[in-house]
Image (cartoon, rainbow, N blue to C red; front, side, top):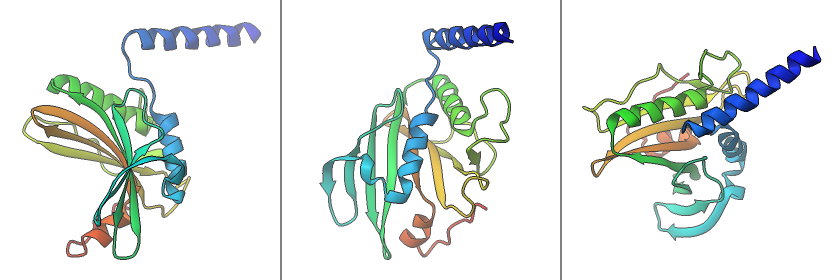
Amino acid sequence: MKYLVNTWLLFVIFSAHAQNRSGALASVRPVLDQVVAQYPTNYSTLRGERLSSDPSTIVYTSNIKLPGAEEAKVLGYPGKKKTYWVWECKYREIEDLQELKRVYRALYNDISGNALFKNPNSRYEPVAPYEAPAETQRLWSNLLRLSDRISPNNRLVIDLVAENVNFAWVIWVRVYDREQDADMRPDHPADDYR
């Protein structure tokens, strides 16, 4: 039994080392779990330096960001009932569409726990089937939410967005309260994703 455990441990160590050398993405889930844990406190412990404030938006730097990300911010949007907070991370800026598709899918799989096989115990569940980026679109999004096993009736969503900005593709990861949509745009009924 001890031999089996030692062999398995060596396999895990060498495969992790090989993945890091091959340029594979580091897992974002541990940091994303920290962000989600701070959601009930409006990301108060994640707020760094205040960058700007105007009547429609409050912007702070974030004290943490996803591995390999360019920047992260905590944004506040005053609504009719309260201020809605969004944790936003500019993950990557990529010029090549094929590279974007590869990185976007790898990030989606990492967040959803679908690296090789669908994980029934995953913390985050897709709201709808995966939609791959396409050259004809300039913006698309895949939403994930906390599993009902972990937090029933929770309105938190993780929004994985790819956007074409100035001839480059930008991948964003946003964590926010879905309720914001109904309060910020009452003329358009919010889609209920449950």
